[in-house]
Amino acid sequence: MASVTYDHVTKRFGDVVAVNDLDIQIEDKEFLVLVGPSGCGKTTALRLLAGLEEITEGTISIADRIVNDVPPKDRDIAMVFQSYALYPHMSVFDNMAFGLKLRKTPKDEIKRRVQEAAEILGIESLLDRKPRQLSGGQRQRVAVGRAIVREPKVFLFDEPLSNLDAKLRVQTRAEISKLHARLATTFIYVTHDQVEAMTMASRIAVIENGLLQQLDTPQNLYDLPANVFVAGFIGSPAMNFFNAKVERSNGKLYINEGTFQVPIPENRVNIYGPFEGKKVIFGIRPENVHDPAFAPPSIQSAPVEVKVDVTELMGNEIFVYLVTGNTSFVGRVDPRTKFTMGDKVQVVFNMDNMHLFRIDDNQEAIR
Image (tube, rainbow, N blue to C red; front, side, top):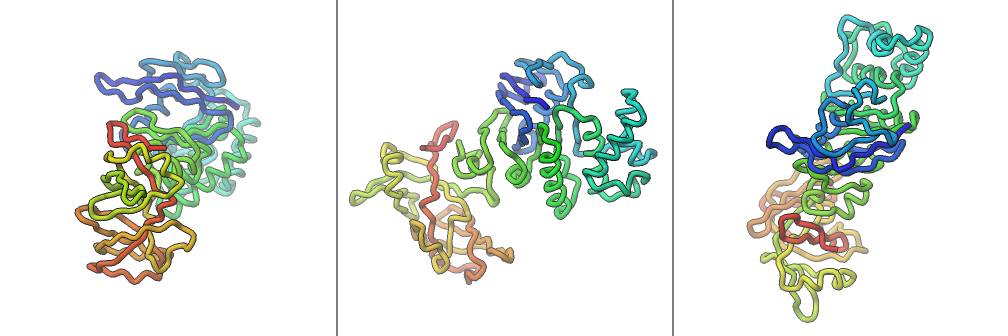
């Protein structure tokens, strides 16, 4: 088992900085997810750890051993790619055993490891089949099994669920989470899907343009995003943002967006008071936008007049796309809501869960 450390790691491809001063300590047996939009540098960070790319600056350590100059085969890691990369002419058993055979592992040991991995993954009955006889989910399990038999210190996953359909993605991510608990080793997982990140990770590293934006638990990323990027990336649908101003009226502090004005909760006045008269970004998540008829009774609600643009019935909830002034935003409301396209209605914001961000280059949260 092993911890992993990125110590001020930078990777440049010519003039392009793919990874910029990445500094992360990953604990032994942790499940860390690197998440961000396509092209943000997360896969490059994984490939640097695997030894598939050379580091421009900084060091990477596995179990306190700096591995910058260690060949990939000697780093004691195993990697699962988006592509299954199975040999079509080999059986499942031979695909899983291939790496061990190259290392001249004894036959009895190979058989033991393959059988054990197959049992963990529930593919014992597939060992004699060829890849063409398998479904996408089964092929992915074989690819994971090929990594398991290595018994590495660290598992690396590079968007392993991208080729699966929606149902299989849900099923397989649950299997990977159970696998992590069973193997009790370090998992580092790359995805652009924030739902995968939130459901699987013990901690998440959010990356944008090669820069680490925030490293925290899934719940803290959701509740306490460090900046507008993290707030907008974590959560689905994304957080709503409004350009606004902090103002005082009749002794109370308000957020004034221009077309609506909502009161700041008393327990936030000391935090946001110093921003009186200043422009800010006001954030509210769709799940904190309610139909007044079905709003939870215990929240500090603030009414806002809006126009209904589109409604999407999801079964257990309705996504309503709303317009106020020139700003569009989304609410996730009770399925009993009767809003229809074109209606002028009132919604309420749950101000207990509001967010404010600075208007500057970093757009950091105000706390």
